[in-house]
Image 1 (cartoon, rainbow, N blue to C red):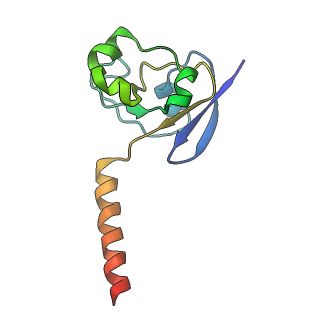
Image 2: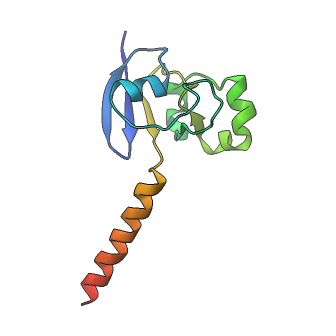
Amino acid sequence: METAITFEPMGKTFKARPGSTVLQAALQHRISIPTRCKGMAGCLMCKVRVSPEHQAALTACTPAEERKLGPLLQEGVRLACQAKIKGHAVVTVPEDPLKAAIRKQLEAQNQEDKLW
């Protein structure tokens, strides 16, 4: 039985095997989620956000996630390397900080150009 995962803000949906992690699904479909620890819950770089209505599509938090994320869990933050898919999951991948800075600069420039 296959499930699906949707990565936001890209709006891309892919088939996923139940039991695979969000990180594994992302890597399989060339969705960039940063990580240094190769899925060992050590670097905390692979944080994704899951809305309350989609929490049930992922497995319960692992003890490693609970220790590492603490209060962030209440905000819907999960580690992509630990959260396993069990239903149609929708996760939001944070924007790369460098890309976000460039996007903000371009938006500011566009606003400035409109004034002229």
